[in-house]
Image (cartoon, rainbow, N blue to C red):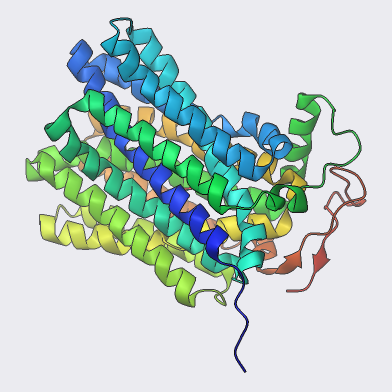
Length: 438
C-alpha cells in the first residue's frame, strides 16, 4: 500500500524563500560595511553601523504582537518587501547625492529590525505547513536551519565576488532583489489559508499593543523549561558570537597572519553547522531533546575553544571548526520545535519574538567585553577563560530539573478559552501525548 504524501510545495516554497532572504542578509553584512568604508573612510563609523545592526536583532520582542495580528504569511511577505525597499534606499540616495551617514545607520537598524520579524513569521509558519506536508516538525525545522546556515555562508561569499565585479553600490541593489524574490515565493507558494487556520484571535483582539506584548512575556515566564532553554542559548551567544566577530579576527592575525584564515575558520564553522542541521533532521527525531540540546553546546564549545587555545595549525583549526559547527547543528531545530509544540498558535509571533530577543541581547555586551578582555589579558588567556566559563555553565544546566519539560512531547497545543488563558498553576492548557537562536 502506497503511503500518502502531503502537499510539500508550500513548505519547500517557504524554505527556498528563507534561504534566499538569508543570502541577501549575508550579502548586506559584507556589502554594507564595505560601502560605508568606501564612502566615509572611517573604521569607527563602520563600528557604529555594526552596533545598529546588533541592536536591530533585539526588535523581535516588540514586533511579535504585530506578526500575530497581521498573520505569519503576510508578516513574512511584508518584512521582505520592507527589507528590499530599505536596502535599495541606500544606493538610491547615494546615486542621487542625498545620502548622509546618519541615514545609513538608521536604515541598517530598520533593515535588521524588520528582517528579524520576517524570520519570526517564517518560524511560526512551520507547524501549519509541516502538517500540510505530513512531515515531522523536527525535520522541517532542521531543513529550515540548514538553509539559513547555508545562506549565511553563501551570502558573504557572493558579496565578496560581486563587490569586486560590480561594486558595493550595485551589490546592495542585488540584495534588494533577493528580498523581493523571497516575498514573491511566499506570496505565490504559501496558501493564504494558513494565516486563518492557525491563528485564532480571541475576544479582545483590539486590546492595546502593550497588553498583547505582555501576554507573550507572561506565557514565556510561565514555561520554566523555555526560560531555561533560552538561558543556555543566551550564554552561548554571549560567548560564541564575540568569538566569531571579535576574537577570531585577532586570532587569525596573530596566529596565522592572514585575513584569508579568518574566512576559512568562519566559513568552516558555518559549513559544519549546515551539515549538523541536516544530519539531525535525517536521524535525530527520536533523540532525547534535553540531552541532545545540552550535549550539542558542551561538545561544540569544548571543540572550538579547546582547539583554539592550543594554537594549532590552520588545517587542524579548520577541522575543529567544522566539527564544532556540526555539534551545534541540532540546537536551533530542537529549540524551534519545542517552542512550536508548546505555544498556542495565536501567541507564536510574540513568543518567538521574545525568546529570540532575549537570546540575542547578550551579543552586544559580549562583544564589548571580549574586546576589553583580549586587550587586557591577551588572546589565549581570553579564549581559555571563555571556554571554561561556557563549559561549566552548560554542565550546571544538566542538573536543572526544568529542562526535563523539553522531552514532554505534544501533538498540538489546545486553544485556550481566551487569549492567553492559563491554568491555576500558570501553565497554558495543553493536550499532552508525547518536544535561532543561535
